[in-house]
Amino acid sequence: MKFGVLVFPGTWSDRDWGHALGYVSGQEVVYLWHNDTDLQNCDGIIVPGGFAHGDYLRTGAIARFSPIMESVRKFAENGGLVLGSCNGFQILTEAGLLPGALLRNACSSFLCEWTYIRVERTDTPFTSQCQKGQVLRIPISHGEGLFFCDDTDLQALEDRGGVVFRYCDANGAVTPEANPNGSKNNIAGVINESGSVMALMPHPERCCEPELGGVDGLLICQSMVHAVAGIHS
Amino acid sequence: MTTVQNKLHWLAKVTVTRKATVVDPQGNTVLDALRHLRFDSAEHVRIGKYIEVSVSAADEAEARSEVAKMCETLLVNPVIEQYAFDLQQID
Image (cartoon, rainbow over all chains, first blue to last red; front, top):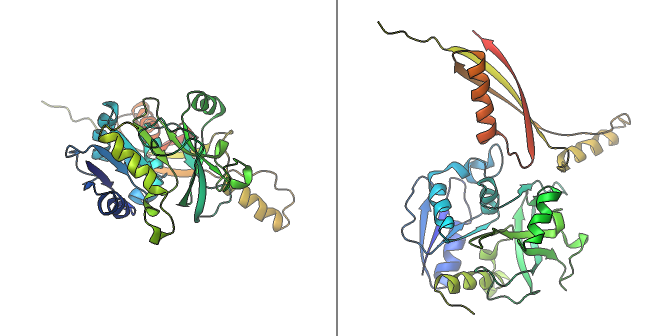
């Protein structure tokens, strides 16, 4: 399968994704420059972390207008799989492909640490290799990861099962103490209504080999690989 | 004979603020700092953005319309923010 990793000026997780999907997962990977419009017949698209366009104005605000994003929008509308992580999450919310917005962490600090997230849904192309309620250990690295939407939209998101991951403790309990950045309802990752676009603040690509301290990120990579290969578990 | 339309120059001073329902950790931290400095009178701090945009437009209505479009397209995220601007003619 072929995955396209978007690269904006200021993106920093593109090569990590390429390594996780290419070297570790054995897939073909191409890098797609933000000024291009050709998705090169990729089966899945990754919107990686970093500081696209310097995060100027707002995180993701300028990146959403890069030419490649119009192609990504059409790709997603046709059911193509799009996964965003960290800055990719911020870009996808700014683009309106996912609900909500990401605000400065409640603690005001940049956080770079391991977190636990609970898998809320396994019937998605991004989590099929996980168990429902499974606790994944995946690092975060962000200053603006507080997931926010107003109460009406939050209720609508919860009602349709749009929350895929929640910050939790090592035992899977979703508590205020386990919420690193003050996200509403401990939300760490959400999916769109059609199930083709999902994003999370943590970095799965940084924990796909034991040498890096964990392999839970592989479950998300493998889920995508299974999905684009048409293998249903 | 062709008529060349003279464009006038305008300066928009745009203020972007967070909606009341949106948390503002930066504002809270500044409020804490003010109180630490014994400004007991400080009750509330909200931090926003100030943006200046100069535009060319035939008249004030056109300038206002352009700036509003800029705000709604790029400068403001309506999920979390609101905006207002003052407009003045320059030169």
